[in-house]
Amino acid sequence: MSEEQWQPAKSRYAVDGDGRIGRIVDRDEGSVYLRPPGGGREWTVAPETLRQPTSDEMTQVRVFTTPVPKVES
Image (cartoon, rainbow, N blue to C red; front, side):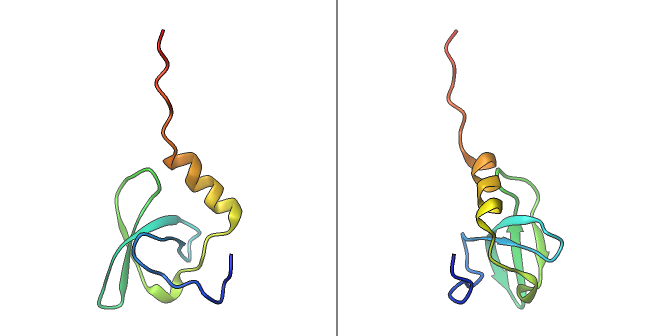
């Protein structure tokens, strides 16, 4: 992943200054709203505190967002 081209934009995943991963759901007046992978409560951070997720962090995102198929018994 190229760090130079990454910008915090809606629908992308980002990591905040505390190491929490979230999908960017909105931006407003110097704030970015993130929601955890798989759903949950949003939180707000300053855009300058965000960074691009590493490949290991994106693997964690896929674990939380990949549907589990129904097993017929």
